[in-house]
Image 1 (cartoon, helix red, strand yellow):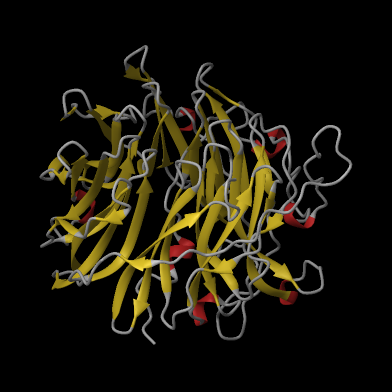
Image 2 (tube, helix red, strand yellow):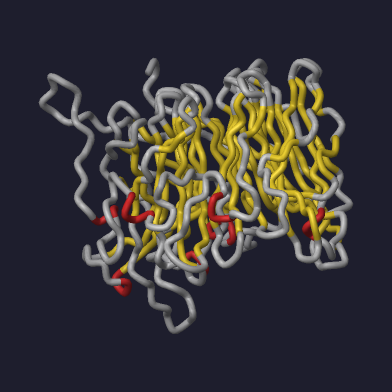
Length: 547
């Protein structure tokens, strides 16, 4: 049995980090938290607290019916034996039905620092022909590709951004590149450079075809100082605009990393990132206003505690991990994880809404409280109790689903030694953030432990989750399969989780995209013998004809 690369890492490293504004609660955030989870300290996690289920529709006496059983579609290999070994995947589907899968492949080349050379491959699903075009090598890599990202617009144009490590002994100054698929030409254009000394690229697109690429630029060394920069792509002219200082902090202290970006479809944009001014890691943000034609002004570097959008941590060495979703009314939803450095056993998850019109945040809402510290076993592994934010997604109306993993106990107690496995859990938060649904265990029909989840949501609020389901509660020791489950917005319930594949090798890098009603694009990398294969699954969002 071959162990696919990156199987464990995908659980511990979140794919995207985003932002929150400080709403007068910087130094004592816990006192300003409102909502679903309540206070912190020694209280039990939200998932162990009683929570009211959604209220049935007016005039009904019975609870909503359960969603239809989940029937898994047929996955197919879409790399067609392309050379190189796939190690990481992104998928995205357009509102017109076209879809893209982009993967990074180890091509066997070795760099002096011990890393590998990589290629970037892409395959396009055509809604018109109901078939995949075939794999195209977008980047023939003689360098190490560290990170890449993918975005599509409503008409099927796609953009990839990646950073290549040009000097293996100076990883902070890679080259950020981009390539675009133009629907009119039905082809990928030649890659273009966005910045010659940057890393952590992320891209976002919207229905208008606009694209925003964000990344982190190293502006001094030593000591290393990095700042968030970005460029817009203008679909009318087909040209990338000049680079802008998204983080307008050009002083000599503190560094930033892991930006993420979203567009609201009206020309406004939002970017979040992690800022490290000293001992703490904090989260910060900035907003681009179409009417003003500029990014907001950040305070000077001499005031690191006043950086726009910053949220203070719960103590020393806080490691914030955050994600964003957007709605069609110019608002942005954020969920974030904060935990202490080290084993991360005292994690908490929060959410809040950024309102574009007023440029302000709703109060931070505590969703999941700290789990008790998890003891270490004799073999060095930890019991599966830590809380981990996995993914969030929001539909146009602002209904937001939050996925996380957390240890379950066999007897209902909160004793770490009784924890039997790491479960995937979900909660739905309404647009105003005033109430939450009951917590549901998404993988309750399966054994083992869950990790590495992704989530897609359609305009009506129906969603599908895909994740790695490990055969053992201790995910460090077992094989991972790919599991899926579907959320029915009308009933507010998840179906019974099922495995999407039953092969003997590991499945990893699960991805989901659901921009339209009816069908999701799911993807993952599957270890088959001595090679990894890229799998794609067009999964129905319901199994009842005519629904």
